[in-house]
Every structure is written in structure tokens, then in C-alpha cells.
View (tube, rainbow, N blue to C red):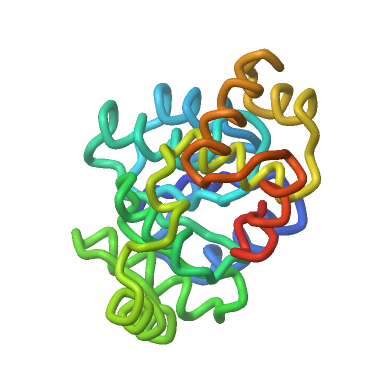
Length: 210
């Protein structure tokens, strides 16, 4: 029996996932979380085999959650679910410890296939996404400037690209506005940009948004 956790802040999405899972007798839902803090608390009290993790939730970002899970719960396999199909999201998720990455526009059958696949110890990326990922790595490597950002800096940049201001980002990440300002300055220096407006434009042009 595959013990499954679902982490998504949208009730409709969670209900849809539960309906899909109900069709498989070897998958049992053992817990739900609606934000990053809930995910970590749930992992601490509930034994599970697979976690379905939404990429955009309030609280600690998905990269930080993946890092913590890899350290504290190495046997828990995480499948990241996202509307984003950009290669840089996939690369960062896998590097941070995710066992798989699946966009939400795939079929219920492929979701079930991915769950079973990573439960057995393998990694999973849909064939279509894997093909574009390989092509991108062959053509560009890791030359993009934002590849040098830390996970937290990358998260701040993505939130800026999504239209969040300093106080909004601080609230979402449970950090002080001063700390967010420090991250913003570091990002500007690494990307060679001079203002918040340039950072936002860079994030949008490179599809770095949540």
C-alpha cells in the first residue's frame, strides 16, 4: 500500500487529486496540507511513502521544503506538481531532492503512473518535459545568469516577478522586510541589474514567476 500525502492550497485541486487516488486500491491518502508549514508538520507526525507537493503555496517555498525533507525524511519520495513547465523549475526541483516533476496538465493516468514509479525508487519526468529539458541543456547548459542564484534568492525573484512587493514577500516567506531587501540587493548584484523594475522585467522575460 502506497501511503500518500497531498500538499496544495487549492481545495478544488485537492478534491480532484483525491478522486483520482480513490480509483487505485493500492494508494491510500494519509494526510493533507495547505501551506509549507503544514507540510513539514505533517511529515513529522505522519509516516508516508509519497508526497504530492504543489510548487506554489504560502509559507516556506517548495525548494526549502524539499531540502528539509531530504535531510529529515530521506525515505519520503516527493513528486512536485506544477503549472510551470519551464526547465529551470524542473532542474531546481530535482537538485533539491524531488523524485519527480509533473505538470498539472497531464492526465490522471499519468499522475498515477508517476506515483507508482517514484514509489519503486525511480525518478520521474514526463517524456515530453524530459525531451525539452535535454534539448535546453544541450543548447544552453547552465549559462543563464539566474542559475547562480541560491534557492532563496530564486524564490524572492520569482515572487517579485509575480507582482509581490517587499512586505508581501516577507509575509509569504515569514521573513522581515529588511531581510527581503538584502536578498533583493544580492540578486541585483548577481544579475548585474540596478533596480527592482529591472529585476521584475528579468523575471517575467525568463518566466521566473509563481
